[in-house]
Amino acid sequence: MITYNFKTRIRYRDIDKMGIVYYSRYYEFFEAARTDMLREMGLAYSDFEASGYALPVIESHCKYFTGAKFDEMIIVKCDIFEKPKARLKIEYEVLGEKSGEIIATGHTVHAFLNKKGRACRAPKHFLSIVSLHWEDK
Image 1 (cartoon, one colour):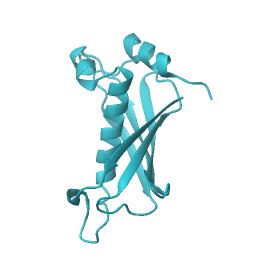
Image 2 (cartoon, one colour):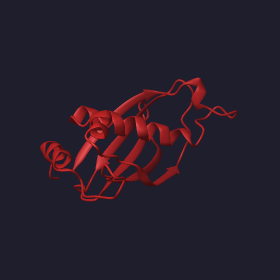
Image 3 (cartoon, one colour):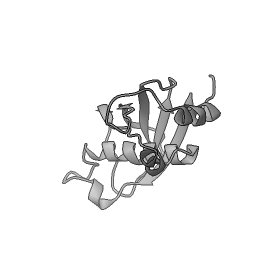
Image 4 (spheres, helix red, strand yellow):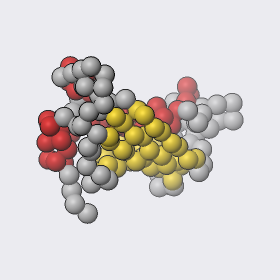
């Protein structure tokens, strides 16, 4: 299992007319958290692409519980529960930093693509870095 926490502040551009975060922004928070997590692990996405691979989102889901508000600090918790094979699933939990309240949950599923744009197994260098950060729980 790999867990990573990403903190961000809700900006004015993130909110709708009702003063809460617009629903599609949560996918942007997921992307920012996921990109940061992979970079911190030593898997910068730009390096991954330069090595001839891609990791597109092939499935996404988000469930909303309460709305985050302007200037609020949130934590986007990323969890990888299964070692990747041909796909990588990342689970997300968005929490209010002060309250600890669950704002939203979701997941994304990613396919590994090779240089020809075809589905493939996770590259060995990707798996070796994931193994370095893996904790059995």
